Length: 230
Image 1 (cartoon, rainbow, N blue to C red):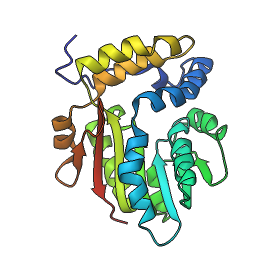
Image 2 (cartoon, rainbow, N blue to C red):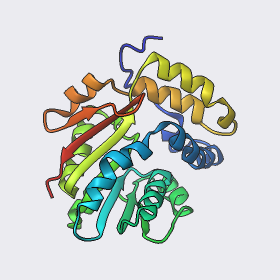
Image 3 (cartoon, rainbow, N blue to C red):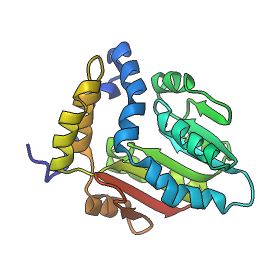
């Protein structure tokens, strides 16, 4: 397997609208465990999100684009609440299956909607911070451009996207580490395909253009940031 080259043509099983609904639901639920172990959002929250939210002189508004099962948004909301920050959280996903799973995590101050970024723009919505987790590698070049542009259009302060950094070591470690969580889910197959579809830092920087700053604040992870335009 050649991980030196991105494989954008791979398709993840859960992206199939006809995939097994029980396995999909189990996958979305267990993302909560996987993301806490590997996504690095706690550090991103401490070093980037918390200072940004604390600097606002009013309650903050945060949008998660492509929120999936909602676990990342719920986790960030808990961290902010623990720090005494007043934040309204919104998660949107155009996939009704993901929206159904996210609704089961509904909590005070958190709203999940089944829609796309373009719908929010058309409604005149804006948010202080717009973020996403593990979305970018799913997109074609045109979709990537549209998605990231929409995120900036919706953000008044900052757009921030987190995704996997492709590497041989990430592939090997995930292949071994996810095994206990995999039965009855798409986690192992789709996770490994995600790594093969994902970018390296220089690739993502080139794909996004000069408006975006791409860094790797935690192992096997990329963060793309740009100022908001709303």
